[in-house]
Length: 218
Ligand code: G3P
Image (cartoon, rainbow, N blue to C red):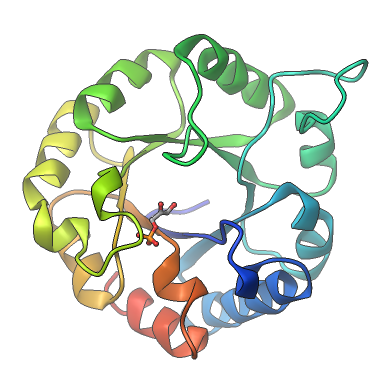
């Protein structure tokens, strides 16, 4: 997967689950094909199979559990996520946080089955702690800006600079409140290798137009 990356987290938005997830995934594929940029999507585990069959852009599972085949009722099996065609997994999102112990095991498990890891951190210091687990990318998202109208790029550019300084280039995504090309441009100009966003796309009336605008910021 080439960088920079725009990763759209479908969360459990109504317009981004079930049949709508497949439809929204197709829109992302269209934009990626037309513009030739790296555009990924993180979908809920129940939609993974249908979405992966439909698109060739990188698809991430919103979570996996550090389990293997066997007696683990209700868990998300990494082997199966890989078999369904997922490229990677998002882990430790502010809305699905893990203890350090579980996170370390889950990253290790993802690596064993060949899933790319994007691990979220609420703060730069948490991101620095997570580095020891060696995830592929770290996404820093100030939780108070998630789902809001003001982006991390505009409200907290220092967080982006600090994250890049502490974690290194080609390793940091930033997110929270990202809505448009200007937000993307600022993040990239400060050294981030992409953005993670959700509501700007999943709640948009015209996701194609929003995505075209976002990718123009790369
Ligand atoms: O995972 C992305 C996310 O938490 C940011 O959400 O709605 O602020 O773009 P949003």
